[in-house]
Image 1 (tube, rainbow, N blue to C red):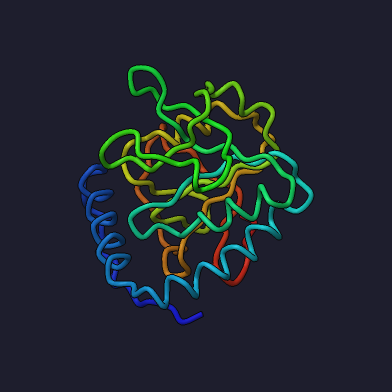
Image 2: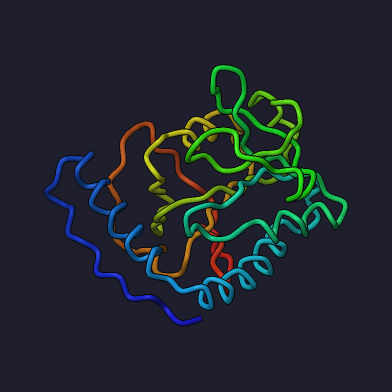
Length: 204
């Protein structure tokens, strides 16, 4: 797969919030310029690599992709068509961030502006993650130390604090978003153990 070249800004002297904002802006700009053909090519690779990573796991937690994220909709369909169970994020009462069982793309609907579509099923608290074998989450950047830069809401960092310590956690990013430089982080930024790319899976 052809790398999309990104010239990342030097954020080493910036305040934490400014550094994260600058990097997020650069990744979002690059993602917005990725054409449909390149996205479709990447999707095939992501599906193959993610299914290889999942292996014999029976219960998976993942996400519904939006806004040029590494695409997951077909992956979600393939996971459940193979007899596995899949949890994806869903808004609960008072717009709380919870989970629901994925039943297929035809069951998805928008719950709130700017939020990914979600299943119609009952919202489940994060306690349900104790029953999961593998977690796959989105990211904007991941470095070789497992430091993850997300969209800025902090939801997945809170999720990772609630899963068992030995739970395998992977982030999906495009190849040029797996970087070898230091990423800005604080005590709330939770690391990942694995990176899923369109052409390989990297254990960190």
